[in-house]
Image 1 (cartoon, rainbow, N blue to C red):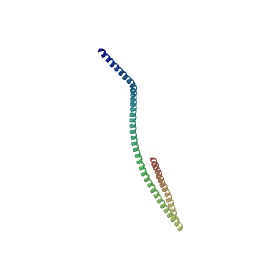
Image 2: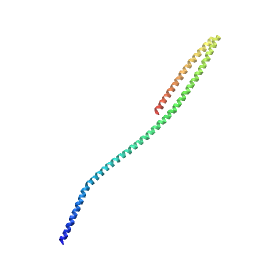
Image 3: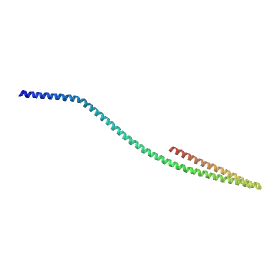
Image 4: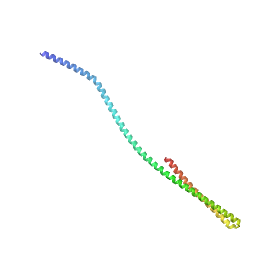
Length: 177
């Protein structure tokens, strides 16, 4: 009976040994797979960390771009305001220039009429024989003509200054656009 018991035990021991050998063989087969999975997990973790870093950098770049965009919008608005102001100034200068030209034309016409009138008076006086007043009137006409020429020079200078200012404003307007 002991022998029978011993033989059963030996049989169980041999079955256990076979099972252990099979499990050991399976473990040896699974070990490389486990190592491969651990390496793949490590690679995925590395990629995840890199991806998270890139995402943070992209978010920061996006925020920087939005800040620059807002700044550019402010600058653009300032330029638009400057452009509008330059347009208004240009319109005002053009009106001033046109008024000055009209005034100059009126003054020229008035002076021409005065000079023609003085010349006619001088011609009448010469024919009537009264030479002293004619000479005085001739001197007065010459002086009026001289004064008129001076006024025209002053008016021309004023018009030139206005045209220069108009040109400067136009250039500024072009630059801002």
